[in-house]
Image (tube, rainbow, N blue to C red; front, top):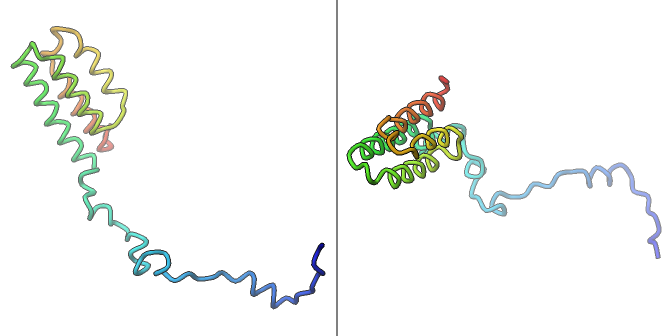
Length: 131
């Protein structure tokens, strides 16, 4: 059974179209400034950690250590390359450049070339917007 149609005037229509404001307390924040982070808040809360400069510095330290350890301890080259690859993936994410450097590193005898350091310098330059 269908209820009888009622005629509602334009004022009733306007009342239905009005947006309802929900108090901020209902949304779980004490004020509107806590709900929306201010512009530049990322830089204040550890934004340097996510910057390309920080990634470049950390990856250069990892690369220098990996290349030095490969020269100092040649029998452990496979373990050192695995650790360096994992570190670069954690720092920069999945990037094809890391695989390109890993291929010659897996060839015995090629590990004396400082390819990890060159990769860190390349990714640092590319991440800074110069490449």
